[in-house]
Length: 361
Length: 266
Image (tube, rainbow over all chains, first blue to last red; front, side, top):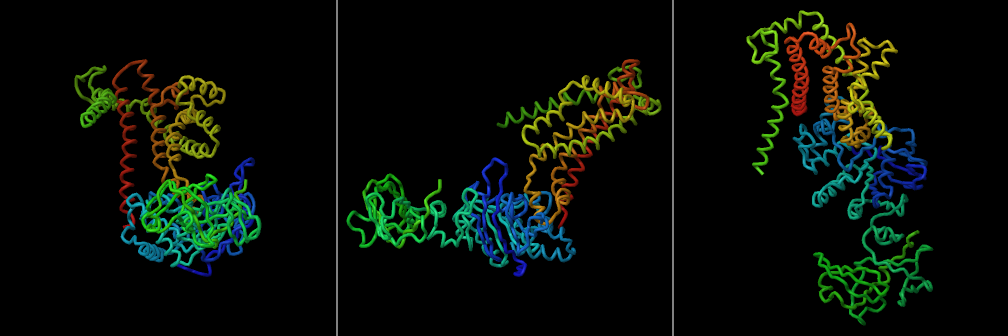
C-alpha cells in the first residue's frame, strides 16, 4: 500500500476563499507546503479557516483565488472524484445502507478492480484494522471506535495520494480518542502516506504531527514542528493556543534589559524585530519565598490564588502586580509549602523565556 | 407509568376502531343479496361484483382510475423529488416561498382548485380528457411526494455525498449508489401517497369528467345521485382493498429488502 513514489507533495500558494462578496475571507492568502509522507496538522480554533482549507484541498470547496498543486500538477480543474485523496470525516460518513465490506470495497468498485483482487484487498485491510469477521455488519451495529476504523480502512484501501482527516476523533470519548490517536500515528508510520489532519485540539496536534500549521482568522500564523512551536511560538496567539503561557507585555530598554512594571529582567534580546512581548511557559516558572530567588533568574512578585494537584505535577495560579494572571506547574513536592493568599516571587531562568509578536488589532 | 401506557394503548386502539370499522361495514354490504343498503344483509351474493365487472361504465371507470393513477404517480414523483432537491439549494426566503406554493393544493379548498383548473382546461381543450385529469391530479399529488422526500433529504448527511466523491465516485454514481438509496423510503412513501391521492380523488375528476375520462369515485358519485344500490359498496370495497394492498405491499417489500441487505456479503 505504501507506494512512496505516489505519495503526495502539496503546494498551496496564495490560496484564498471568500464565501460572499462582503464577507471576510474564510481563508486569506495562505501559503503552505506539505512534504511527501509528512504528517501535517492544521490546528486552530473554529472559524480559523483550517476546515475550509482542507475542503479546498479535497475539492469540495472552490478557491476564490490561488493554487493547489499535487506533485506539481495544478488541481484547479481536477474534480474531487479524480483527485485520489482519501478522506476521513468527523462523523465517519459511513454509508449506513451498506455492510462494512461494501463500504470498504466502495472505492475499489469505482476503480473497477477485479472481484478477486477486491476481496483480497478488503480482507487484508480489515484484518489490519482488527475488523476481521465484521464484513457483513452494518455501520449501526458497530461501536464508535470500530466505525472510525472502518472509515480509516475505506479511506486508505485504494492507496490514495494523500489522506485527509477532518477532526476524525472529535466524537469519541477521551480514552478511545487516545488509543485511536496512537493507531493513527502507527498507521501513518506503516503507510508512509502524506497525512493532512485537521483539529482544534492542541494536545492531539502535538502528539501526532511532524509539522503543525497554526491557523488564526483565515491565516497561517506559524508553521513548525511541535517542539519549535512550543519553545518559540512566534506570536502571542500561538503561545496561548499551543499550551499555556505567562504573558508579560513590557518593553526593551536596551538589548539586554527588558522592563516590565518596575522589574528589570535580563534578556538575550528578541531574534525577530517587532517581537516585544515576553512569554514564559508555566513549567519553567518556580515559586520562591521572597528573597530566596537563585542568582541570575528573572522574577516578579505574585499572589497565589489557587493550588491544584494534577497528579504528577501541581499547578499554582497567581496574580501578578499588573492584575494579569498566570501559573506555574512544578513537581508536587516543590509546591507543598505554597498556600493560597501567600505573596511569593515567581521566577525563571532567562533562557526559558521567549519573545513573541503582540496580538494584531 | 404502566397504567398510563396501557391507557395509551386503549386510546390508540379505540381511534383505530373508529377509523376502520365504518369501512369494514362496506364489505358485508357489498356481498348483500338485497338491493338496498340494509344491514345486516338479508342474504349473501356476488351479484354487485358481477354488476361491477359486467356493466361497461363501472368497468371503464375502474380502468380509467387505474390508468390515471398510474400516470399521476410517476409524474408527481419526478416533479416532487426534483422540487425537493431544488428547494434545498435555495436561500431560506426563496425556499419558504417555493415550498408554500408547491404545497398550497393541500390547504386551498379543492373545489376552488378544481374550478380554476376546469376554467383553464376548457380553453386548452383539456377538459374531459385523460391528459387533463392526469395533469390536474398531479398538481394535487405533488405535495404528497414533496413533503416526505424533503423530510428525508433534510435528514440526509451531505458528508455522505462528499465521502462517495472522495472515494472516486463521479457525481451521478454518488447520487445513484448513496443519496438515492438513502432517500428512497421518502420517495416510496411519496409514490404511495400520490397513487392514493389520485385514485380516490373526486372533486377535480368530477369537473373534468368526460367520455373515457370518468374515474371510479366519479362513477360512484354519479350513481349515488341517480339510483343507490350496493354496486357502490362493491366499488368502495375495491377502492379500499386496492389502496390497502398498495400500502401493505410496499411495507412488506421494505421488510424483505432490509433482510436481504442484512444477509448480503456473508
